[in-house]
Length: 137
Image (cartoon, rainbow, N blue to C red):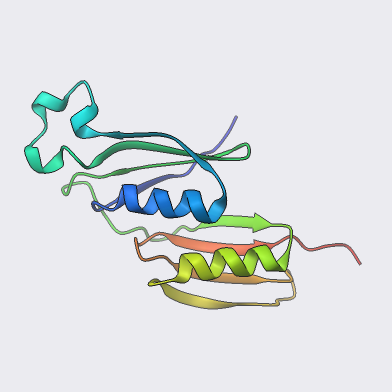
């Protein structure tokens, strides 16, 4: 079994996944627009460039998403996408990149459970927690 997060966006899925690919070092394996799908003829013109499905692979992890139709879109709440990295430098780099034009809810810092931990909501509305693996003493 795998559990893969699926993010909904309000028209910014392509931009978000392009950023996530660069920052997380993954590969976008699929990014299909509504206009390139088999149902293109049934899609309103203003939706043809919106993302029907995106799939980003980072190592053996998968992050998926789409541009949700307005009647189904809601800002994320009650959950975060968590990224766990091995080094404080990686945590800092990822945190700063995702925080750019976003909102920091807990600045990245040393905590009793992690050498570097921080929380933010990126400019696309996705909540993130960035943490570093605790190394045994």
